[in-house]
Image (cartoon, rainbow, N blue to C red; front, side, top):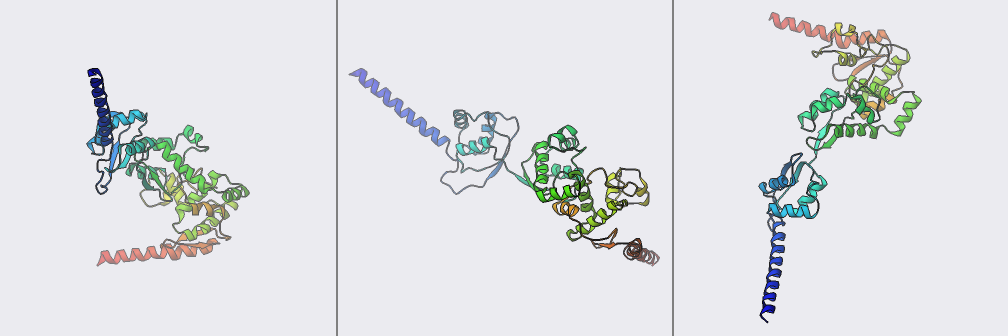
Length: 349
């Protein structure tokens, strides 16, 4: 009788301990802020290479979990302790340990919008990415000129100049440079549609040649309404074997550029000096946007061979050299002489 009583007491104690342990564990894994208005979220950084114990310590220090040991136990029981992905996470105290664990396992990190403007070159793109802490600029700059890596993307080129499509992307902080680059190349493939490919084939132009011409169009004008006209000028010149004479290509090939193009720059020996070299430069000089890509393949039906800036963001187009010289006189030389006279009057006053 006594043995039965003792056995019953032991069993009851074990049941109570089990229930107590279960309830304690359940409490320990419950949201820190349960029953309260939803607290503000916070950004928590899980460094690359962190152990699961370190992850639990970070979460505890941020007051996002009630118990380190309960979180560790939960992770091990679900075989997640070795599958946590590093990065920035948006978490709050209303999340249960299981929800936090699942988010860390799935790698649902915070994504940041990053805009690559149309007409940016590789150096400028690297600066944008570094400035927003998206990826390592040195690794990025190395990979975009690595022929072996470029080949893995299905591209035959010396660099990825022109192949990184300019648009707004969503990247995590400190993303791998190769992942960032691949996303931008994928962006180009998305806009390189069937109708563009068919038109390029009809014109006997490769993607590299289209990107090259489109990049020059992009750098020549900021006006979307003019791009087909600029394209017409360049197509007409290519057909007549007249040098493109594009200042942006010259600038791209210079070792140093002080912000103003000089007459001496036009005589520099460079494959990008389209005043001296006939045809397209060897490759793109920037990342063209979708409008410039389409303009390169669908130019305006016009006989223009020349254009000159009107100094208001637009250009004056001409079909003959005589017309062009008149436009240069009107929009460039006369305003320059007026400014020079105004400067002399100011200094003499």
